[in-house]
Every structure is written in C-alpha cells, then in structure tokens.
Amino acid sequence: MARYLLLGSIVILGLGLFALGTERGPITILSNSDFTSENGVIAGTGTPDDPYIIAGWDIRVPEGELYGVRIENTDSYFILRGVKVLGAQDPSGAGIYLANVENGSIEDCLIQNSHNGIVLLGSHGIAIRDTYMFVAGLGLQVMGTSPEHYEHLIEQTNLVNGKPVHYYYGLENQVLEGIEAGHITLAGCRQVTLKGVRIEEGDGITVAFSEDVVVEGADLFHNRGHGLLVLSSPRTVVRDCERIANNALSGVSVWLSPRSQVVHNGIYGNQVGLYINASDRVSCAENAYGGNALGILVTGAAREVEIRDSLFSQNKTSIQLDSAIGTVIERCAITDSDIGVQVDAPSTYPRVRDCSFIQVGYGLDILGSQGTFEGNLIAYANIGIIFEEAYGEAHPTSNTLRHNLIFRSRDGLYLGHETTDTWIYENLIWDCDRAARDFGKNRWAPSGRGNWYSDYSGPDADGDGIGDEPIRFGGGGVDPAPVMDRSLVSKLPGVLSTMERGQVTLVDEAGNSVSLEVLIADQAHERLLGFQGVPKELAQDMAILFVWDEAGNYGFWNRGVTINLDVLFFAEDGSFAGDLTMPAGSKDRYAARNPFMYALEVPEGRLRELGLGKPVRLLLP
Image (tube, rainbow, N blue to C red; front, side, top):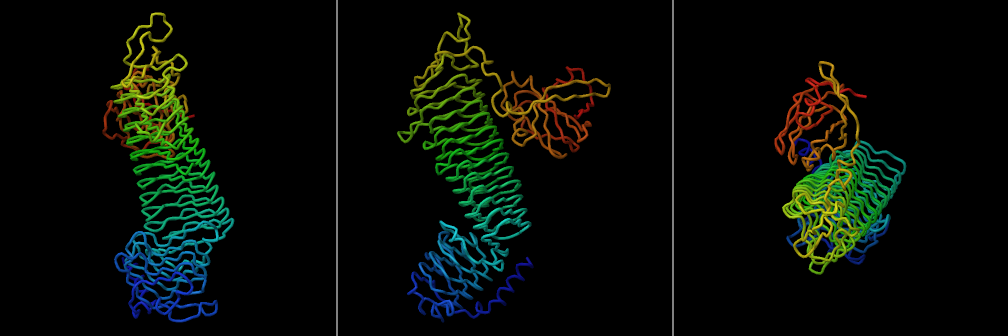
C-alpha cells in the first residue's frame, strides 16, 4: 500500500498541470482542420518544429460518452501534454483514442476512474512517455492490420496500474528475461525469447507481426484481456508456463499465426483457455486446461490443428471446433464437462481418437461432416455420442464411429433427423440405459459386422459370431449384425491404450519377488485418469504405475472406478512409503503420510494372491 501512496505522490508532484488543470468536456478531433482552440489546442501550428499543443486540461467524461480525447484521420504533428481524463467508464471506450493518426505524442498524462486507458488503432509513429493509466480494463491497446500500425515509440516510463509498459518494436535475436510489467508488446520482432516474465492485473502480452518468438515460463494472471495474444506471428512457441489463469478473455489467443506451438502449459479459469483463429497447423500438446468456460476454440477455417496428450478438467465445453478443417484430437483426458468435444456444422474432416471422456454431459457432440471418431472411451455420460437435432441448420454426413467404448451412460448414441450416411460399427455399448436412438439415415454394420452390446442375448445358430436377431432402436435405426464377442476391439479404448507398458519388480521383506506388467502413467492426463471408466471385467486384469518428476504428497481418489484398489507408495529410491485401499467409486481423497515419487495401483488383494507380504520394495532399473 505504501508503494502506491508514494506513486500517487510522484504523479501529482511530477505533473503540476493536474492540480491546476482547467476542467472541460471531451475533446473530439476528426481531421487536421479540427485542431482548434475550441478543441483544446493552446499553441502550435502542426508542423514538426511547432506541433499543436493540447495541454493542461482536466477532462471529465460524462455518462454516455465513449472517449475523453478522440483523434482520428490526422497527420499533423501534435502533443497531448499534462491532460487528465476521468470517468471514461464505457467498456467500448477509452480515456484517449487515436485512429488512423500519425505524428502524435502523449506526454505526462493521467487516466483514472476509466475502463480503458489508451487505444491506438491503425496509427503510426505515436510516442507515449510518462503517462499513467489506472483502469479497470486494458491500459494500452495497439491494434492494426500491418506492422507499420505497431511502429511506435512507447517508453517504459508509462505505467499500467502501477507497473511499467514494455513495448518493443523491431528486436532481433534477443532474450528478455524476468520482466514484471503491466503490459508487454513485441511487434515486428524476429527470434526473440520472453523468459520468466510476469503480468498480473494488467494487459497481458501481445506478439504482433513477428516471427519465431518464444514465450517461456510466463506467469499471466488475472489480466483484463488476453493473457497472451499472438497476431500474424508465425511459428510462435508458448511453453512451460505454469499459470495462464483467470484472464478476462482468453489465456492464449493465436490469430493468423500458422505453425505455432502451445506446449506444456497450465491454462485455468479463463473465458477461453486457448483460442485458435485462422491459424493453420498449430500444435497443442501436454497442456492442462481447467475451469475455463471453453477449453479450446478452433475457428476461422483453421486447418490441421493438432491437440494431443492434454488434460481437460471442469471446463464447461472442453474443445469446440467452430469452423475447422482436419483437426486432430488424440490421447486427451476429458473429465467433468458439459460437452467433451463439440464439432459444429462448418467443420469437416475432424479426427478424434484414443481419448477418454469421464463424467460428461455429451462425450462427442457432432454436427460436422467427414469425421472419424475411433478408439475413444466414454463413461458416465448423459449421451456418449450425439448428432443433435439441427432443424435444417446443419446436415452432418459421412462420419465414421468405430472401436469406441461407451460405458454406463444414459444413452450410448443419438443420431438426429438430419444425420445421414454415418458408419457405425465395432463399438462396445456397455451397461448403458439405452443403447441408441437413430432418427436419420445411417449405416449400421456397413461391412457386415455391427456393434457389441452388453445386454444382447440373441442366438448365434451358425456360430459365425454375429447375432441372428437384429437390434432395433428408437427412431427406426437397426443394427442388423450385432457382434457376440467384445474381443472384436483388440485393445482397451481411450488414453489407457496409448500408455507405455512396462515391467516392474517388487520384493518383500522375506525376499519374495514378483514381476508385474504395468501401464506407466507419467504424464498429467494419464495420472488424472487411472482406472476411471474402465469396466470391472477389464480393470481386474490391470495395474498402473504412477510416476512423477519429483517426490511429493499427491492425492488419489477412486471416483468412477469399478473395483477396489490397493495403492502402494514408493520413495525416489524405490523404498516403501506406505499403502492404502480405496473402495470402488469412492469420492474421498487419499494420500500417503510421507512424500513419494511412485505409486502402484492394483486390484485389491492382487499382491497377496501373488505371494507378496509387506512392506514391499520397488526395484528400479
């Protein structure tokens, strides 16, 4: 608090005009001819040597007005000096607004009790120094359609909510490290790395019209717009940012920036976690998205976006393909969402495979076409896969559903009236209240093999593995060839099928040893899932070894798990660190008393059946 009181004193002492300023209403200048005394000009002729001076005004913006100072379509030289703007409260407005302006300077100004500070739109060559913005929205916004619109001289003597503005234009081959700021912009830059920067309750970071920029280890928290906005900047890399959180618009927004990468970040509590617009071949991997209204939005006809190996928890919608072509979503864990993946009508050729959807309203919500949805595990959903009624607004066609496991959901599949030519075969519909409804014109068992249903009891007189009695669904759909044996799907669908397999050796105090085949969960999305959503008949033959990068007291639960589990904890050297048993379906939290680096989950009693006593040591390779 003392810091801000001191800052306030500096502002008042440094800008004597504020104390003596003449009060007036907003200033509006829409052409060079509007630089007049009526519009606040106190001196100058508008030349480089004798710029117009607008100075010493105390501007109070009345309700209903957008701007304190509005200047547009000018190239005369001018200086705003010692101007104080109060009360520009409209979120669409700003204290100072310059549009299509050249040759202007803003010096020693103050913007307070306003929503936004300064907006530069399509302007060039603006200088800003010693100006202080205390705002509820964005302090400084620079917008334009070319690099020239970002070419300004904006000094670090400017403050946004008490923190400096760092504005860089034209840097090359530099590393900027450890900056704490209210605003950072890189524009017209090449091969620049921002490392370990922090912006809280400011404007976030903007990267515009740059190439090969790296943002690494940034902390972007509670900013008033985007945490990070990437605009027309190909091959931007955003990596290893543990907290991109609670930003008002998006955590990361990638516009017109092909081949960018967003890798190994924590993106939480934003309106949109990651927003990809008109940017082709963007790669997103190993990120965690939690508590966002929308985890990832892909739009603007973006092509071949890849979303892989990521964790989505408690996002209202985890992934939305609004207008996208050829998006690949694979090996992702999606839990506690209203919608797992939403594919809207303009989107085509999506591929969603080897993902796990646990505790969702809809697992896959599809209105797009020519998609392939395969190898996914969907458990505890209202509807596993839905082609919604579109009432003539969409006509999803030529999609393929195969090798998916839909477990303990109210409805396995729902296909609306506009849905046509969907191929549905070799899926496992297991313990669902209702297997399917089909009101469209679709193809069940297109090559003679349909789907497996846990409650099917029809005969197979000729022993060919195909039930003799078809299954008829609400709406008129028919599976003519229900499959008798669930082994038609050779691997367990979902993320578990993609995890590394390995052998561990356990030794008890008596010297008895056992080798055990395990799935290795060493990534965040794998550790989140564990045994969740796996039918009992499959879970009883599994074992999972959880691995972390460092020892800690990590929590466990057994929600959505169909069997009791024994959990054994091991320290970094493999020594025994404790054990416990979690009942099937328990929502309680569990942990060891001591820090651990490894945890082994096995069906209750498995190790006892193998002849091991306690304590047990894990032999490391």
